Length: 145
Image 1: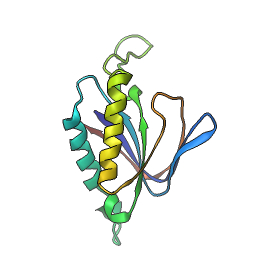
Image 2: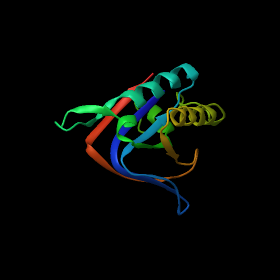
Image 3: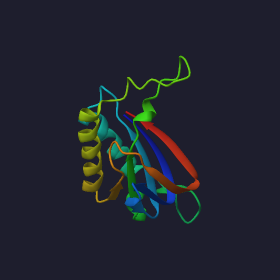
Image 4: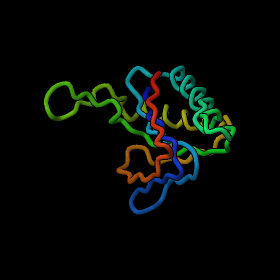
């Protein structure tokens, strides 16, 4: 499982002209699920994301977690995080989990983040989405389990 975490000032996702998720301060999470992922991987990443200290304290040091600052999460499924570009010019996505596996794991991931007390907005699994955000910092971190 891979999550590209981007600290943001705001973020939104639109599908077919309708906003499906919108947050202010928090994290935009692009979430990729691979063929071998289980609940163990998502439990690890939920704990990591909730506890990472990526927000500044009064002295400007990254010392506060998203929980401590009351931030929100916009979670977007992103199978292209598992693109293999080693050969040719067209990426292969064979390492990305099929939708029947990835969708329930992504939904469970979001539910577990909510259970931590975080507000979680989402995109629409498997849809073409327009994602807009203002990266804060910029702070962008790749997390893997």
